[in-house]
Image (tube, rainbow, N blue to C red; front, side):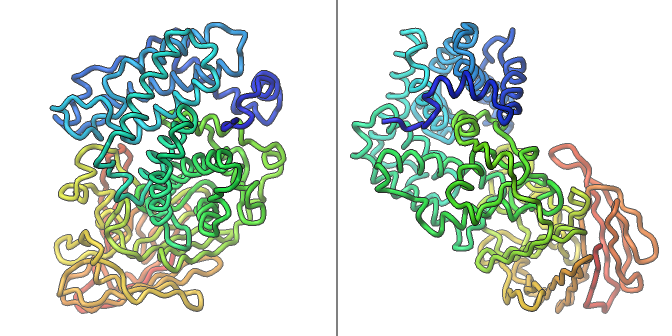
Length: 561
């Protein structure tokens, strides 16, 4: 059974990809990656001292950087072997990198390893699952061209590390029993696809476990289809979900079709709503401030839901992410649709969306883009950010949400996560009380009385602070054609400071703050303004603009245009 579509067709790679203008960007990138990862380059070294560094300092990068270079070497040499079968150097390099990956102590990364004091070679985390899936696709497509010993080693290691590990785990993995985020789709989808490719004789027996995993993943989305983890995690989790769903649909000869579900179609339209101005995007949670779409994913969804999914210019697409995930790189080639590529959706700037369950509001006009959220402080990849907003103009966020920080051990511990400015409410466009009285963690710390009526998105965010002295913070946004007005009304005896965060140095002048082309107007008689700057974990500067309200002032308004 052909589970990977036209990837099996040699002419697709050697004729279409090499000669069709729609694949020029894809082809150019693969040549560039060959030079970056492989040409004259040794296999990246994975040292034990780097592996254990995560437990010493919390630093993930010292091990993960060479780990993902290896995955880049694997993906690049495999695709180049498909495109240029007559060039022996590509398959030679692929033999070397596959052999090296088979030598790795574990395919998981140390940040996800359960116990570094225990010999645990067969642990399945996100990246072990992805590696097993990648090797399975490579074996399926190129196994007959790999050296015999390399192909046999690959098959044995996938069997031991993925197939046997999954089947022989009586306690089940946490990501299949209590997970509703990207881990379910990536781990479950990758392992499920590995079974279908390498051990289809076992898949029917084990499939009920994958059914439960995918139901859990879909349950993590509200009915409005919004991904509260952030835009990058929609691409990641949902990208692996549709890869699995496509393969299952083929495997079952159409009897099982996740894409027939209305909720899946709704989730498919999420990413097109996240553009605010040019590539400036909604970066709530661990999202990104600028957004490119994964070409294969969006083309696949557009063909499924032609009246619902929008695919913008291919100039803002990508084919390979920073972790060199092979299935997504493969999908970008085999799912590219020439008609969609040449006829993208016109970028109609005017749009307005309100997600009632997720409590996100987004508006785009020809002048600006705006997003605001309510919600609670225990969402996936949570930031304490109930009531925050973003204002974008001329293709970039100007009043910003920083999105994710650098991933280190401390970032994923509740005791330390909110010490990061990127996660604290003090790093968002929100008020604070007294001496930096910030929002608190927990689902109970949430917005209340949330509504969107007559063009006004309003909420009470006092509950997010968990402070009896902060009785009410009524925040309302009114988004017009050329500007957005925000009005806060407070019931508290605490000193009040409103904060907005900019990416560029602001100019303060007589009731107006200018951040590049954005002007924030306010009443200077009600507050004192100060500006401080801070370097983020990603080494760019932010500017914290504080409006300290005068004693007795209980209302504050700004207008952004």
